[in-house]
Each structure stands twice: as structure tokens, then as C-alpha cells.
Image (cartoon, rainbow, N blue to C red; front, side, top):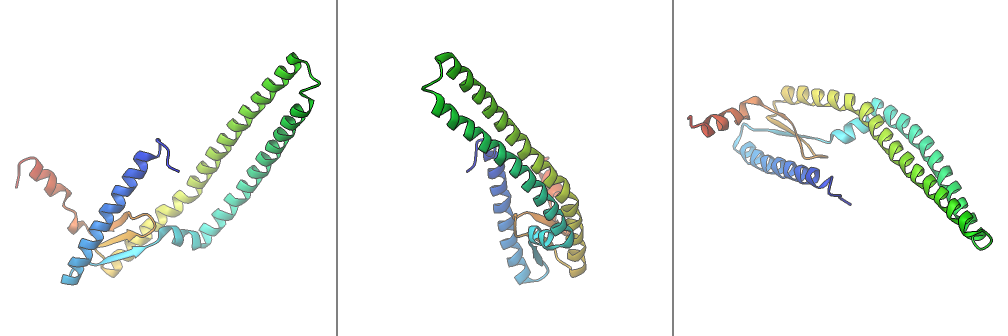
Length: 182
């Protein structure tokens, strides 16, 4: 479920996907007229199916399982403490009940912080493991595109354009016209 933090990212991703789809449909029309060819790749699948991708995923999965076991053990411990407090609530003094309740709340907050840090740690590990593979895969994609004469390559998983023949890039011309030039 998107949060307010991810909403701009999602909107940008949707805009990029729409632009890529529009460019692809325009490219297909031009290709039918001859001269403009489009390649399509699923980089996520290519990386995931590669030996290096599988090795990185296995290493990440091992780390994830270890963190998961640690967090599950801590969660079970907290649930037991909560159940014990509930059972003993009637026999404890008001002061003792409040003290143990506050102690439990502190431990729950620490657990939530530990969970957040573990999530960040896994995200960082994933990015560190996959970034070099993604960079290499994009370079390989550009090499294949050039060798096959593709004008553009679209990543079907993300909708992003990975390669465009510089002859089709009109950014400088648009800038020049915006500045009043022809």
C-alpha cells in the first residue's frame, strides 16, 4: 500500500512508464515505416537468472533468514511477557503492574526500532549486491542494442528506456527552441 512518502515516487514511476509506453508505440509506428527498431529486455529476470544474480540472492536470503529468526524469537519473547503480565495483572499491585507495563512498552519500542534497522540493513545489502550487476547488465544491453542496430531498448519490468540511439534524442533541439532559436 503506497504511503505519502512513496506517492511522488509512484507518480514519477507511472509517468516514466507512460512516457516509455508512448515512446514505444511511436517507435513501433516508425519501425513499421522502416528505420526505427526497438528491443525489449526484462533486466530483473536477466539479473535474477544469471549465476551472479542467483549467488547474490542466495547470500541475501541467508542473511534475511538469520535476521528473521532473530526478530521472530524476540517477538515471541515479547508476546510471552505480555501474556504473563496479563495473567499476573490481578495479583500485582497497581505500581508493579504499571512498572512492568512500561518496561514491556520500552521493549516493544526497542523491538520496533530493531525491526526498522534490520529492514534498512537488508535494503542496503540488496542495493550493494545488485547495483554492480544492474550496471553491468545495462552496459551489456547497450552493447547488444548497438550490435543489433536497435534505436531503443525498453526494460519491460520497469518501463524505463535503457538505451536510445543518440540520433533520436532531441533534447538539445527542444532546449534551443525554448530559448527562441530554430
